[in-house]
Length: 81
Figure: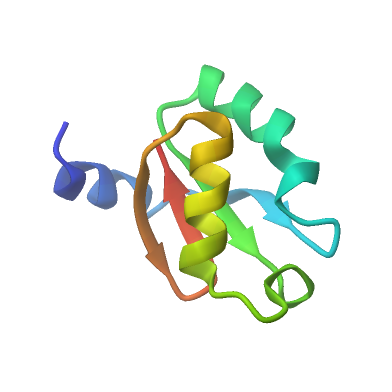
């Protein structure tokens, strides 16, 4: 599927992973499990997780940690495939 089709499909998804003050490392295993079960996972980066970094940087780091593709970031939310 193209990125455009994946973005359309992700539009109505609910957030199932929240990254908080414990950071990206705390959710890597959970995200990997969810990606095994689903095609797309929506991740929300809470203010405590962002600190001085951008959502894009955190999303890239998380995607790399689980070996996923980052489909898009919008606001404080990212979609991974």
